[in-house]
Length: 175
Image 1 (cartoon, rainbow, N blue to C red):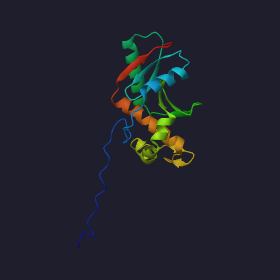
Image 2: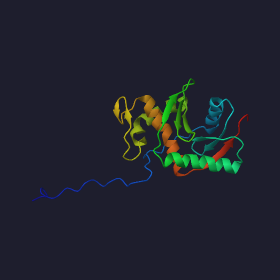
Image 3: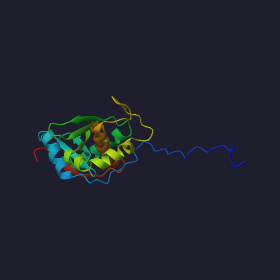
């Protein structure tokens, strides 16, 4: 009788991706030169680091060859991606947000980039949560203040780099 007793079909389940990743891949282009300059400043010019295509940075041991530096950076990012990508976002004195992960991997949210793209960040931040991920904040499960929304935005770039790791440059200390 008009399907009243017909068994309802559950909605299709989101495909399982391992490791889980967020749905949001921001199309906002990050200024890599400024990220490099800020990391040089934050490390007092004393550390080598690799920069991935989408701006994720891996701090390197000193004196590695370019090939060894690239391998070290890719392995560090892989280790973050294939474990739970715990993030530790910190407000920097210059207004940027530095997002630290394990294995000396980090992302940076430049304050002016976040400000210029705030409406998209605010609108999309829930899509920056990885599949089935629950993040506990002082506001509740998966409830974020502006700082948290910006951190999730920055973390998206780490996921993008981790899914397709391409070291775009190696920066040497003192340079």
